[in-house]
Length: 274
Image (cartoon, rainbow, N blue to C red; front, side, top):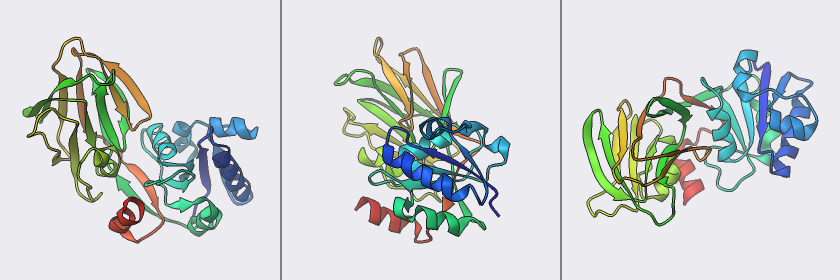
């Protein structure tokens, strides 16, 4: 039985804040509702950071927006709570509920729900840890039309050395996002694998790789005086230079999603991406 719910929304989109307000008002008489600070400011109420909601024994997060809103909420949690996404965007691969169905769907899970777990990636630049990735880590040139050199290691064995515009390291969850657009494979979330996809490689033999999910991946930049950026889930970015080493490994705590539909991953791919 659900007793406490957190609500987050895409604050720069009035429609999302409006739906969040409807959800909050709908639930307030039934259970305790906590609201992220950005949404709370828009609605004139007290807010609580998403990262602190587990401490308040919140049972699940309702994220109103699109995939970015879901990813941003998960990124703020060390041990993510289950997230249910309400779609206010376009494709919305991580959001299963349309806005007009939100209240009915929420009521249907108040007595309990199933959870899908998806592994995340921990990311380090040298010894500094970045926020974990649910979708992907992208290492890309900081200047358009400037190519970078990469050396990629998997468990201390050299996987690839190439020049390219960038490199995507994606989870199965992220295989349907940037990695897919760059020519990578679609990976069933049940597969324990990480996908490495070069972006516009200047090498005919460079192709996407699927490697064991438990692998430790290390990336070095080869061309001196070239600036690059590490982007995590499109939500966090940090500049790097040729002296920096990026290390990526499976995170201890997975992302968690409220299972709304049982039509399966393959049906979702067909309905969302075809």
